[in-house]
Length: 99
Image (cartoon, rainbow, N blue to C red; front, side, top):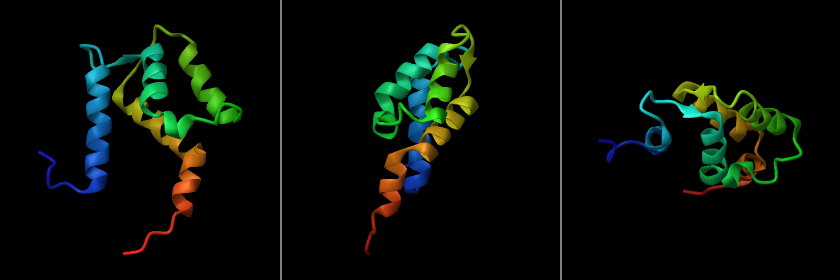
């Protein structure tokens, strides 16, 4: 459906597909599944962030009350939060592209 979509549309569609492929029948992820998914699918954004207080706060929240589940909206907020604090984001900003 998104073959002709923009890069941004495809990126968000991919995030939704990854979430849906891992979600339970109620369309939710356990906190431990969320943590595992982030560590396997979002590694380049989170590597090297372990000493940052905000990263520790986000990851430790996934260890607390592990029976609680994450919905898609909360998952996307996690992705955005981790992206904003990532060193990779700064590297991306520093890349000058020419057309």
